[in-house]
Image 1 (cartoon, rainbow, N blue to C red):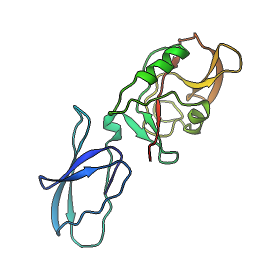
Image 2 (cartoon, rainbow, N blue to C red; image 1 turned 90 degrees about the vertical axis):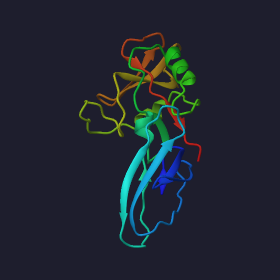
Image 3 (cartoon, one colour; image 1 turned 120 degrees about the vertical axis):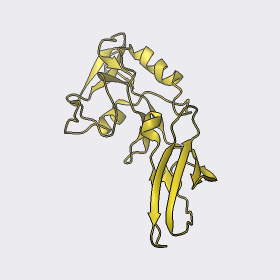
Image 4 (cartoon, rainbow, N blue to C red; image 1 turned 45 degrees about the horizontal axis):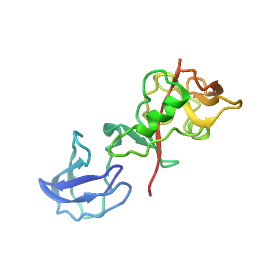
Length: 187
């Protein structure tokens, strides 16, 4: 059993243990049906549950995915943790940096703006149903600021997931530029 967020695990209504993100645990259960529940360690979060039927003692794998409901996505390739949505409105470069620095999400307070390379690394060649070329279930509403200084003094790099382009933009420009925040995995 593995999860992407800290949670309390119970089986058939009985508390079992605390699950730590990205750590695999083994749980021995009897044959038959079992109700597995996971409650995230975040105030107001919804519990995850699944009914499983064991017909053999052979090991089975179960992954408990809580991230999207808690507002984040973990990129399996890089292990970077991304917010599931950008901030939703125009920000200057310094406002975007402050937005991420002050963000508390899923119990974490160490969010930052990604580098321009990290933004580019999560882009895809094919567009999703919303017209954005991004890997993962992330909702975007414009260009995304990076933490990388631009090519000229007073500029920052921004990335357009619509066409995969990047541009050095005046730091005070807030029109289409948004804040999409990341955490570097603590594994």
